[in-house]
Amino acid sequence: MLSIAGLAIAQSGGAAGRSTVWKIDNLKKIAGLPVEVLGEPQVVKTDRGKAILFDGIDDGIFIEQNPLAGASTFTIEAIFRPDAGGEKEQRWLHIEDTENVESRAMLETRLNGNEWFLDTFLKSGDNRMPLFAENFKHPLGRWYHIALVYDGSEMRHYVDGKLELTGKINFKTFGKGITSIGVRQNKVYWFKGAVLKARFTNRVVNPREFLD
Figure 1 (cartoon, rainbow, N blue to C red):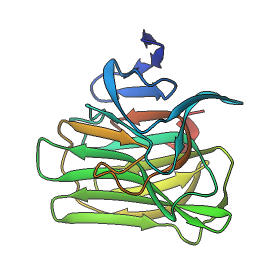
Figure 2: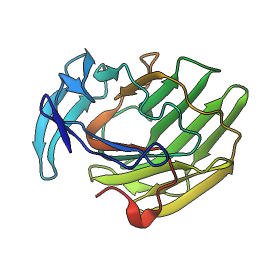
Figure 3: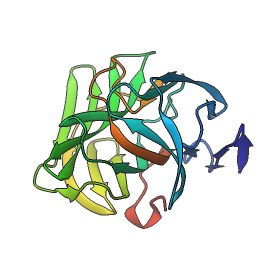
């Protein structure tokens, strides 16, 4: 376990199974790298520990790192709380490859009244796959674990350990890049809610191994 500027970063496994946990609990450094802050996101105490609260208007953070660089299979996990009153479409975790062919991974929420559903997205060059889980709605204002898994040919996503959708895509190995939390990297589709932590693993993580 490493501790950098108040941020705990757990790393395990070798090159074939590297896993990095980001505790999203400060606005100074994440993974040892400076955080670019947009707007005025707040560090708040919650029943799960410290988290960053985004206002859904102009709050976001950017980190100059792709934690999945070099990965051809991977799992992205996050623990977050989507709140009421935000935009209907919110892109709140965005990894962009800036080294190779245009590739990205995105975690998105779509609001419908007092509920939300997960929309995940992978793009690699001309290949793209959205998983738009409109038939799997969840109440707003609660904590959830979500996971996007890519096994080399198929992507799938889960909410609280339950599989919702799958889809096939040919995804090029990730290169170096940038990660944003709270907003899409072109600064649209702002997120309203809190993000507690994320984990990035360069292999398939099974539901029984998901982040607590």
